[in-house]
Amino acid sequence: MSTQGKVSKITTNTLQVMKQKGEKISMLTAYDFSMARIFDDAGIDVLLVGDSASNVMAGHETTLPITLDQMIYHAQSVVRAVDRCLVVVDMPFGSYQGNSKEALNSAIRIMKESGGHAIKLEGGEEVIESVKRIISAGVPVMGHLGLTPQSIYKFGTYTVRAKEEAEAEQLVKNALLLEEAGCFALVLEKIPATLGKRVAEALKIPVIGIGAGMHVDGQVLVMHDMLGITKSFSPRFLRRYLNLYDEMKKATEHYISDVKSKDFPNEQEQY
Ligand code: KIV
Image (cartoon, rainbow, N blue to C red; front, side, top):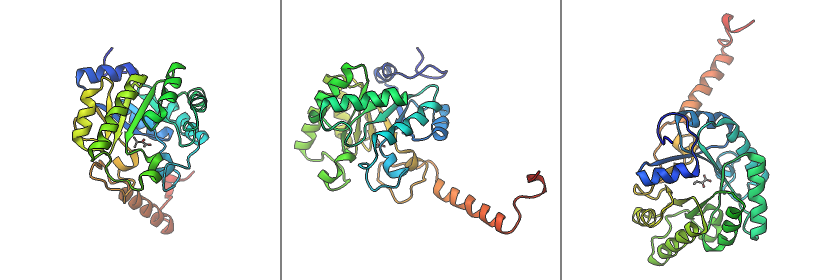
């Protein structure tokens, strides 16, 4: 199996091999067919159908409002687009916190109805029973620790997590618990780089960071942030590769002006 170059489907096992080889894992969020097609064609390793769809697609302030049905809809669109990458689907707030039976039912709905390859959920020891139950049904689970946006009202802010010793120790303990429970990978969000390094070294499974520093096994960004579609969100960890907001605004202004001035359509652009 090649982990670089020609199409060979990325599986959870591929990610494990990549970690062992020291090959960094690239991951982006995606929520629709057209963008997912571009990312897969570009060679992304993992696409996350993130519950950040609640923010960037639906315009909500938090990730809490998005529903299981809405996540499945986004995931179906992404799955239809990809040939190579692994598609991980976020379990939305309220679809797994109740009990492990509810969590399993939600995970099964995602897998059956969307065709996604794995699910992601937030939390440590409080969700371990659910993680084990979902994995025992054959569904790969990615964990998510550090800043967990579904708990934003508990934290009160989106600032860096686990800067204090006690919270850092708790995070390491939860990371080990998730690995022991059978998670195939772990996302760490907005924590000190030294802690990201410590967790990546302590775990055998790949650790993928978003604002967790350079020493973890891979990186994930929200596509709208990476492409510069969002403008106001500028955390230190974000590198923008395009300024699409301005580019798209400029193109739209140009189009409006061409319509108003009767420049568009011209002779060649009509039947
Ligand atoms: O929903 C999401 O976009 C995420 C990433 C921030 C990891 O969970």
